[in-house]
Length: 197
Image 1 (cartoon, helix red, strand yellow):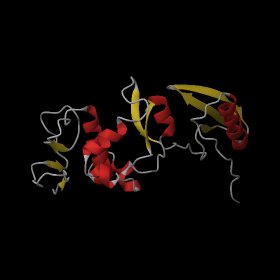
Image 2 (tube, rainbow, N blue to C red; image 1 turned 90 degrees about the horizontal axis):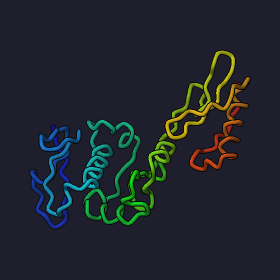
Image 3 (cartoon, rainbow, N blue to C red; image 1 turned 180 degrees about the vertical axis):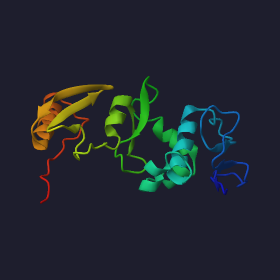
């Protein structure tokens, strides 16, 4: 299998520097794909592993998360792809860096890993920002139940059932109203679209 070699500014390009491929180094507990040998002194930093996993899932078709990132056209900007230190300097200056329970998140879930599209958020915000998993009804949080429809909102791993409705439209609208009334600004408001006939 071929490995993609990353460029390290100011260094000769050698195969032993960094190779990305489906390898599992014996010296790391992380299920990654990398042989790492950097000279910036940060290769054991948590952000280095995050950066390596980002590169892997955006550019390696054999990576576990590739179908959700690279296959969807999500890329890493050139300056970050080629230089971990530039990535590190950017993300460590963002609000909430280093706070307990925070995780790196793309503001636009369909956007690239690039300046202006990363932020530190808690897991609840990151889960809400992930691609919505729509039920068979075509709406997030609205489910068919026999002859009725259920509406719910998930907050911090807890499902809040909002009620049972006779139409999808009522369920979608009530869910939207619950989001508005409770100032759950991180949840998108869904637009009901009548079925085409």
